[in-house]
Length: 286
Image 1 (cartoon, one colour):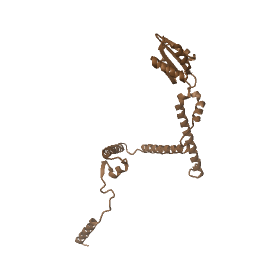
Image 2: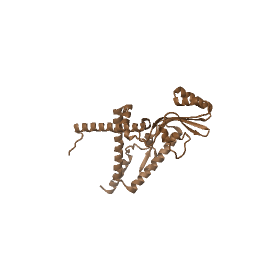
Image 3: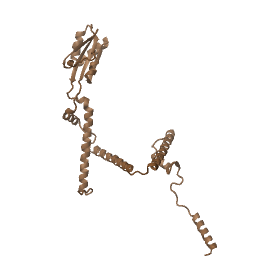
Image 4: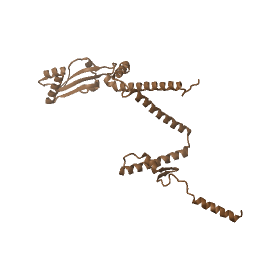
């Protein structure tokens, strides 16, 4: 074949190739929202993560924030890869983190499908408290009680003392009415409180101890000029005694929950392990 014929053949082939329709690109015409180095964010990528129901100005703001964060994150990742390369140790950490997450999900599944709505009963909590009393020891005294301050010359003092000592429901209501009418100061401490905080309600002196008052029953008195203070310590626990359940109930609850979760996970792990060995899905050659 001469050169002229060869040139004609090549031109025909080129024309034929040029007239052929290209294989369609599935992303052709897809709007590109952002680029960061070699990475591309297309509209279809954004649609996949766009929150349902978001519209109007909220939608525009969300898109702007997402695109900005996407560009920043990808630029940082590419810069880190360029500076530090593909670090095998980092990849191992990522795999370990992923494994930890998915394992935690499995453990939570074990717990939810074993324990149901409740990990423990109130009896479990009290049993734990009683078994571990030695771990709940007070390092200072705590009390419950009440205190009232009134003018020393109050005429109904005898009646007030009788009611204050009794503290039945009726007596309490009468003392409260009396205090409101005569502008007395009445304080009730119904939750366990440190003894030092209770003493702050009274005219105590700094650097003076009042531990001897803890063992006194009934109404006690402290004068302060023209004012008289009466107080009653209705309950007490001293340093070295067991902390009341009410004060440590949350710690007990957390401890019992942690122990119960660990028991459930261990039991499920053991069951999974035994079944895998039985079905030859796991083999140990030692």
